[in-house]
Image 1 (cartoon, one colour):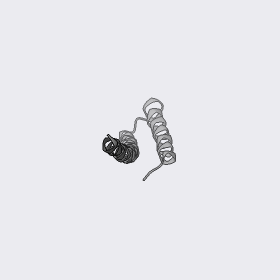
Image 2 (cartoon, one colour; image 1 turned 45 degrees about the horizontal axis):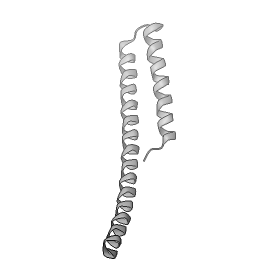
Image 3 (cartoon, helix red, strand yellow; image 1 turned 135 degrees about the horizontal axis):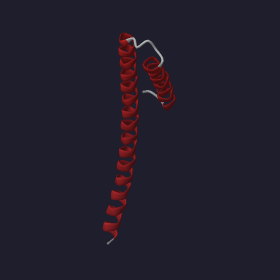
Image 4 (cartoon, one colour; image 1 turned 180 degrees about the vertical axis):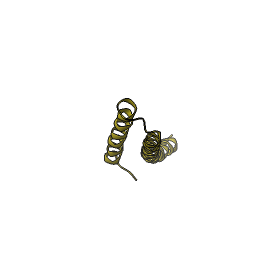
Length: 86
């Protein structure tokens, strides 16, 4: 699984590619093939970044669900003991 450090690296790459594309549009010779390649690279990097965030969110959700289930089992056990004493 990718880490937040990996995500930071990908955002730096997106910044670099975006700056390069912006420069090509504003001060370059308007090379459409180069701009297509840059835009594709931006898209691929953004997709990888979205996948990394999705995986991280999924892992956190799984941890939360496991924690909630563990607490629920403890609570259910306590309720059963309370019901027995009544």
